[in-house]
Length: 327
Image (cartoon, rainbow, N blue to C red; front, side):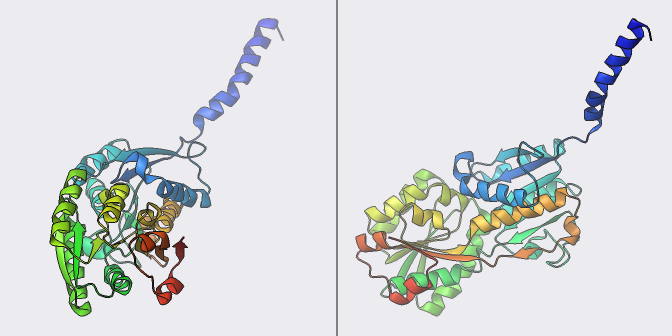
């Protein structure tokens, strides 16, 4: 072989791996649609990634994630979902937001959606049925609404002399705020309690709501489940401590921040499950054939130190049922 022909052949052989790499399929991209802020997702994002890893996917290694943050502005969900559709992501994952799941569903009938929602996804129109979703969406129903009555009952166990309970809701989160009102009213009647609702959609409005409810002197506070409130948990728990107001919350992050008590679905486990379903869809399973899961892990967390500061003696029966007690 002549030298020139040998060099040409060698160059062609050297290019084979490059050509082979060029023919490999592109890394799949997950569009993660979140109602909250980037710096508040924390453990929830870790749980989502843990679920992905259970199916063999690791961000930056064999899957990429496009993040879209609504930063508490629920009216931005449709435009964020539409942007993910324009980018032709492989799956849209929406953990913890009914508004986000509905926005994703409205934006596409073809891109698969893995959701985590607190309301009934059949009633919301996300799926045809829990067993056979039938469309491009499936996920987990984590029962935030369904456990509110029990959370109110636990608050009464902790503060047995309570008769008037203030309830904080975010009116910007229309569906969640209305379901909180609808579900708590009958529960309060059964328990012999009177609810008074207060609205707050911003940090300033939280301060204003507290100023009003403190003047009206309720016996306890029920903080509705909402991403805004979770992101402002330090503010909310500090206000409760300052005004010596016993309060119950929906997720453990509040108790970690100094809140008195929380009861609800394990949000970390919900995010993990959404990650698992996202991975299974990436592997080729169809949302139409993946049944909607229902949350089975619930957490009662009590902060004993906060109880002592408030002068509350936690009943032994309540402590025995707690999944975690923070000393």
